[in-house]
Amino acid sequence: MKTVLISSFLMGVAVTASAQTLTFGTEPSYPPFESTTEKGELVGFDIDIVNAICNEIQAVCTFQTQPFDALIPSVKAKRFDAAISAIDITEARAKQVLFSDSYYDSSASYVALKGDMDLAKAKNIGVQNGSTFQQYTLAETKQYTPKAYVNLQDAILDLKNGRIDIVLSDTALLADMMKKEPELQFVGGKVVNPKYFGNGVGIVVNKSNKALQESLNKGLAAIKASGEYQKIYAKWMTE
Image 1 (cartoon, rainbow, N blue to C red):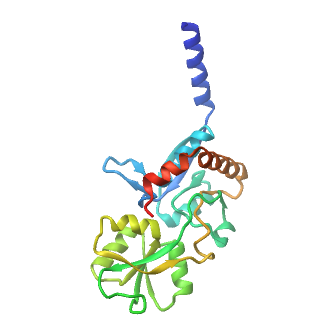
Image 2: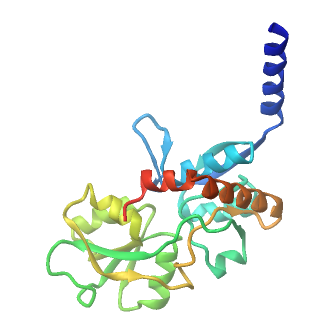
Image 3: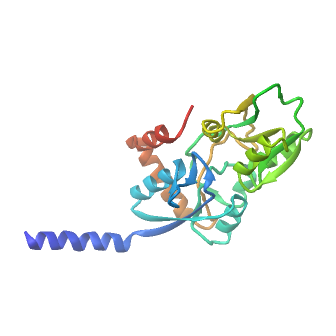
């Protein structure tokens, strides 16, 4: 019996020692996709998706936090292996990096303070710096004057203080935020523009790392087939 236990232990050590270690960049102020607890722990939909995928492909996953607009440049510079932070799959980004298969269907929405605000009356709009929402606003809705923020929370704070009229961001993220911000409301319908969003979000990897892209896709397909993906989705997402 002791021999069997020792052998099993050594096999476990060997598997752990041989497991690939992957570092993922993320911007942790984007619930329900990723956020930080009071204890400094990273939690969220993206975090659980990565951990489930890594479990499938027998990799050890770690995370590094960075501003959103630094994630793709850091992947390109190989500062970490991949990035996950509700990153929309776009043609422009796909010229710079590789994307995994989509793991979430994205759309955008506007929010304003509850009242008589409508999109026709809005002038100043808050968007996250480096996001597709910023790109869309600059190119497609020039009637608005955009103000860029490092994170969405700062944009919402300015909205509540009357410095901007509306905020554009991911629909699920805004729906989650509105649970804690009852004075907010959606204005207008969902925005889907394939050039900027609507193609889903994916995990970003360096152009030279096709093998990692394929491995992540394999793990993603496995957790979808096993039902693990749906469990994670149900835990974090609100329709």
